[in-house]
Image (cartoon, rainbow, N blue to C red; front, top):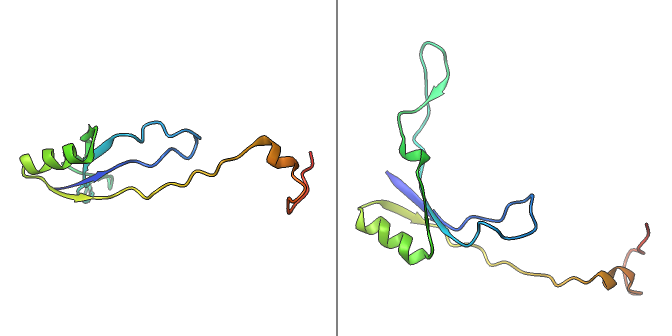
Length: 100
């Protein structure tokens, strides 16, 4: 079974970067099998529910190698912080005038 090691992105509903500091190891889900009687999708794979958290990328890779887990590593994209100030709303060189 193959696993993915990645650092999760920040939640789109929040402005802070909570829950983005740890590296996660989770197994790729197995294909879903339709039930012949009811037609519901199901799987017998319980590893899809496992999600392990590690402090560093090296710890996650070492765990996967020690347990013989085939893994794929996804590096996070660099983030850019744009400093903003409330006073920027009232600058004279704004392209669009600020109004209520």
